[in-house]
Image 1: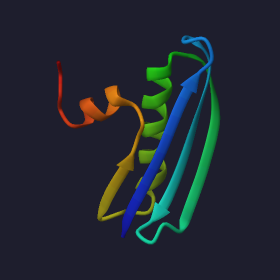
Image 2: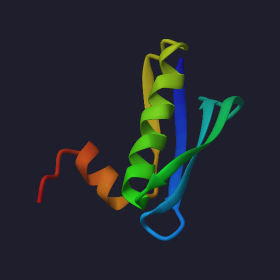
Image 3: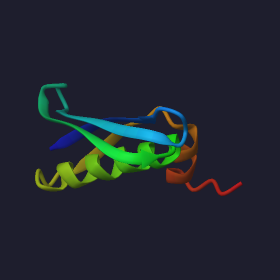
Image 4: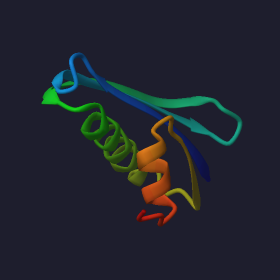
Amino acid sequence: MKINIYTDGASRGNPGPGGIGVLLCDEDNNVLEESKEFIGEATNNIAEYKALLRGLELAKKYVPCSLEMHLDSELVCKQMLGFTG
């Protein structure tokens, strides 16, 4: 099973009150699970990372053979791809 993970995180004030949202879909884009959560005081980057971690935690129980992650944080995407600069 392939799972698509859609995530977003944000804070008001950076840092400020933060929240995350996660959507898990199967390969046909049928929704498997949704999650949203207030995470307290956070920066935008921390919120983006927490959203990704939540998505991975939720996907684990489906034992997927592959994951495709859809993120809008350039920082998180680059670090996931191994860029350090």
